[in-house]
Structure formats: C-alpha cells, structure tokens
Length: 116
Image (cartoon, rainbow, N blue to C red; front, top):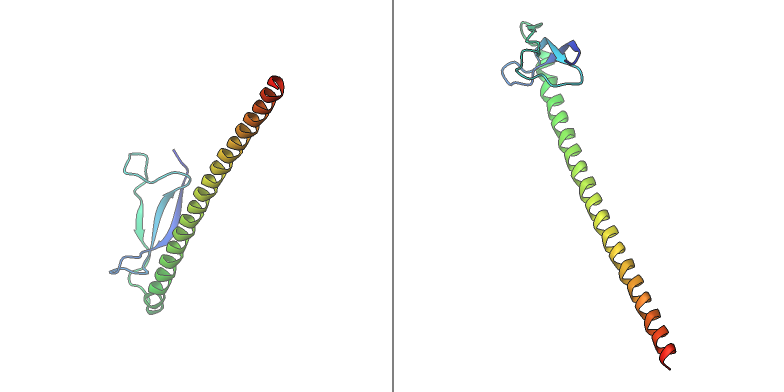
C-alpha cells in the first residue's frame, strides 16, 4: 500500500468552486475504490470568499490551458520521435542496399577478371 498524506485541496466544481477541503491522498499510487484507499474528507470552508470566487476561475482556466499545451507538446515530441525512427530505418535500408550493390559490383569485377 502506498503511503498516505492529508492535503488541503480546492474544488473545481462550479457549485463549490474554490472551496477548500481536507482529503487524504495516496503518494506514489492511485486512490481507487479498494479497501486500502482512505475515504477521509472534510470541508474546511463554509463558503468561498469573494476573492476565492474571483480567482478560482482564472486559475482553473490557466491550469486547463497549461494542460492542453503540455498534451500538444507531448504529441509533437511523439511525432518527432516517430519521424526520426522512420528516417533512421530508411537510412539503415539505404546503407544496406549500398553495401549489397558494392558487394555485387566487386563480385562481378572479380568474375570478369578471372574469366578474361
């Protein structure tokens, strides 16, 4: 079982947006519905303050944008790796063909000198 840690979190749900709560999170593992997962949860705020209601949507929008940018960057990286792997494979094939052609021409040259 992974170690557990109590953490103060903020909700992103529209109804309670920005409201703080205390929850137990799993370190290095996943919090699933198994018996090993801790179900502790406690609201810390009765109501969200005006500043929290104003800043939470901005933070959420920024977080969403950063997450989308990270996904796009990861996709670009994966595409670049795929193109690089394809280029390496084509280079390997071209080198192999050049080796075969060189070997074939040397073989023909040896045969022609031995015959003539």
